Image (tube, helix red, strand yellow):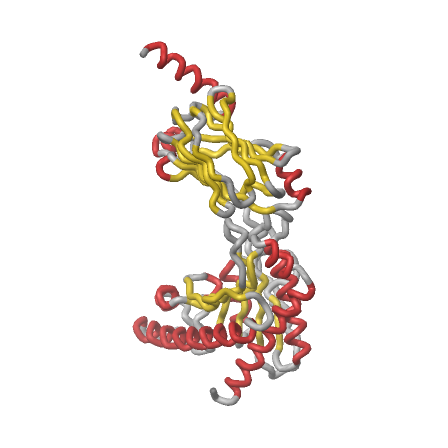
Length: 404
């Protein structure tokens, strides 16, 4: 028993030297399986860490886990054409043969360290080569013990001093309804990034916002302004604050969706949920300076309960108008662009919380999906997105003008 403990202590020290972290003895890798783009490795007992590395040629992904014995149950699939296991150093190497170029996406331990899930993302040959040169990836399981011993760090980011900015230019014929288009993210905030191509959400949303602006101006029925016309950072309240300062009649925030799997596809739209609206109404009612909170009405002399009721009524009317426009956009977008079956959703999103201005957040597609990303970054894709918005906007204001 003493000899066995000594050997295990030596193996643990070897793993510390190799990975910079400890690992529990897992004895056996029970199963390696592939479901779609997700590789799952199950262990007999909890594991603290593993290391992933891209190899090639041929294209392979190596998974090294110290303190383990090779198992026998393996089930390849998806982008993994074959799986092999063999002893390597103090543990086991699981070798995944790839049928196409791929990179390592989100990865994490689950089931208390007894399972490791790794998502693979399709990539170009160049993308695979770039990921390979980046070197090994260490994956660590979270445990309360390791967290308690971990050093504490404070991350400090200098924030530029807030200063008043000039409002953006409004384009279009005077007297027309005003639509403010908000290109999501920007500046130090890149948004979601396509893992294979490096395409950044902040760049895509700006191009789409400009395409929507141009399409609306060509229609000639509304005025248009952009919250940002270049690569700059805006805080969330500043975005809809610009629209309110311009007395916008409609606010559209443009974004791109992203998830760990590249299979997710289609556009969707969000409007504010009732729970979020209640909280925002309470926050607005609590302000000391309540002037011009809703539709130019000065609430400065109103009692707190009256202010809350007025804001609540205005906000609920705004939410109904937002939901109506969201449904209209879904109808107009469906023939032109890929959309999700449950197109209209509700969420507590800060950028939607203006109490007196119909607002939507338009997720134009998945930047994590290769097909969606190519569509979003193409001139044809932007043109179709812009056309769907233009149709919905023109019908929205025509109905409002007619009293419907």
